[in-house]
Every structure is written in structure tokens, then in C-alpha cells.
Image 1 (spheres, rainbow, N blue to C red):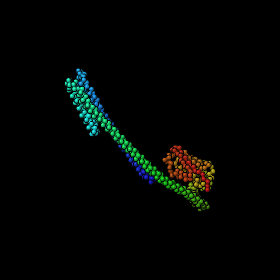
Image 2: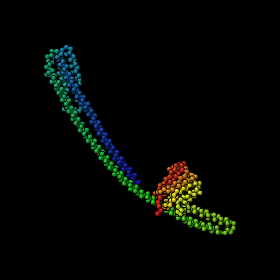
Image 3: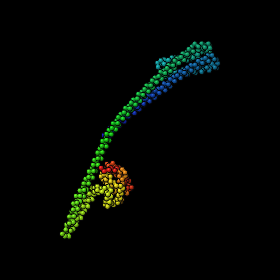
Image 4: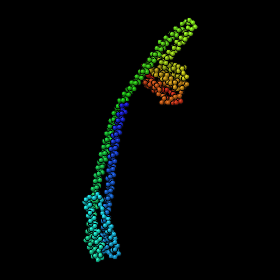
Length: 444
């Protein structure tokens, strides 16, 4: 499992870099497209504003031209105050037209600039002719005016109108060409956007395929490691079970040796000491002390033998052994143990009998050492498919962080190795409950 962490870190880093590059490319490309569209829009707005301004100038000039033609006519055919008003208005209009020239936008082509120059020339000629009419005397105005309007000013006006309209037509033609170019630019941007999105999609698919490949590889490696780990755990569990069995076998052998060999030797020693006749008061005292030491040694050896493995667990069964254990703990400590047995338990094999006995033994030992309780209860009963053991006390209890000692771990391993379930429920001030469920298996 440790080998997978650097590989996963490396793969995650690679995927993160690729994803970051993809996001940066998309962001840069979309930003470029947005900036390009804004530039096109700004240029279109500026060009339309300049074009409309130019066309408005041409329209105003043409309108002023027609207005001068009307005022020239009134100046020639009218007399008195109306003629003077027409003359004054004509003078003011000509001055305004002279001050206001028609300026083309900076993006005009040479052909359009040539047309604009022709418009300016035609306008200047017409203004000069109109000023000539204003400078005439009374008799010349009536005599020469009508013919001058028809032969001189009318052609000048038509020439100005023609050149102005030609310039406007060139501007409109340029606008159409510009619109075509704008559409082509937008089509090009659309093509670029499609390419960018297509590239992003291809990159995303490659990233997805790479991620799927990598994670499938990790899953396979994880499965291999999990199988190896499971096999190792199974091996450790089997080894632990064999160690426990070997320990129990050694305890059984040592217990029998202590009981049969050493116990018999101490018994014989005590008998032999009892048969010795004291020669005096002093020797009688020594014999009495030797007999007492032999008796104490015999009791110690028997207690050691029962502690290693009580003979009644093998000879009489689980229930008598648990009852004897409860009496022994009650006799040698302040803990009052109540053992209740519900069932026959005749079908339990040696491993399960030993497991349940050791769980009760370890639980009662913990009660005496750590719980501070004055009483404890051991309940063993059997269900159709399992045996349920409960050991509870009314002691101080403990928190979950403090309930992971060697004794509890040993009890848990014993129970789980035989396919059972083990649980400890405890909280400060509420005592402790140890529960073990073992499936029943008929002796082979």
C-alpha cells in the first residue's frame, strides 16, 4: 500500500497539470476571441459614426445648395423689402457654406478622395457664381439673372449634386465591402472557436482516457495489494491461532506436570515428614515447620496448576470450570462474582471451551485490577446456533481511547479467530460490559 501513494501522487499531479493547461488554453483562446470581437465591434461603431457624419455633411451641403437656389431666384425676381430679405439671407447662407467644408473620413480610398476634391471644386464654383449674382446692380439683376440661373448656376448645382451623390455612393459601396470583410472576419473567428473547442474536446477525451487507464491500473494494483494483505492477515491469524493452541497445550502439559509430578512429590514429602519421630522438643519444632512448608508448597503448586489450566475444564466441562473460577476470584479478592449458566454446552469443542474460559478469566482479572467494582456477573447461555457470554460490572468504566490494552486485544483475537464477535461497551461511571458470541461447532 505504501508503494501506491507516490504513484497516485504523481498521477494526480500529471492530471492536475494537464487539466490546468487545458483550462489555461481555453481561457486564453476564449479571451482572445472576446477581445477580437470587441475590437471588430469598436471598429464597426467608429466607421459607422464617421460614415454617417460624412453622409450627413453631404446631405446638409446638398440641402444648403437647394436653399441657395431658391434664395437666388427670389433675389432676382422680387423687388423691395422681400428682395432685400432674400439677399441678406442668401448672403448669410453663402458665408455659412463657405466656412463649413465637407471633410471625408481618414479611411477614404484615393478614388474617393479624388471624388471629394471634385465635390469641393463644384461647391466653390457654385458659391462664386452665387456671390456674383449678389454683387449685380438692379438693372443687371433683372436683365441677366434669369439666363444666368439657367445657363450657369443650374449646371453648377447639378454638377455639385452629381459629384456629392457619387461620393456618397462610393462610401456606401465601401461600407458594403467592409461589411463583407467583417462577415468574413467573424466567420474566421467562428472557425477558430470551433477549432479551439474541438481541440479542447479532444484534449478532454485524452485526459479522460488517461485518467480511466491510470485509475484502472491503480484498481488492479490495489486489488493485488489487498489480496496480498488478506493473505498475510490470514497467515497471521492462522499463526496466532497455532500460537494460542501451542500455548494452551504447553499450559496443559505444565499444569499436569505440576499436579501429577511435583504435587505427588510434595505429598509424599509431607507423608514422610509426618512419619518421622521427633527426638526432642527442638526436633519436633523443626519437623512441624517442615511439614507446614511442604503443605504450603503443595497448595502453591496446585494453585499454579489450576491457574495455568484447570483440570476440571477438561474433566468436568466449561460450566463447572467457570463456577470454580468465580468462587476462586471471590475468595481471593473483594470482588463478589455471580456466575450463571444457562444451557448444557455439551457440543462445544476444546478450542471454544478454552476461548470462553480465557475471556472470563481476563475480564474478571481486569475487573479486580481496574474497575473498582464490588461485584460482577458472568452470564453464559446458548442459543440454537451460538453461545453468548456476558461479563459485566458496576465499576468506574473507561473511555474508548483507554480501552485498547493487551488483554482486550487478546480476548478479541481469540473470539474472532473462531469466527465469533467480540464487543466491549463502557463509559466513565457506568461500568463495563464484555460480550462474546461464538458459533457452535460439534466436536469432531
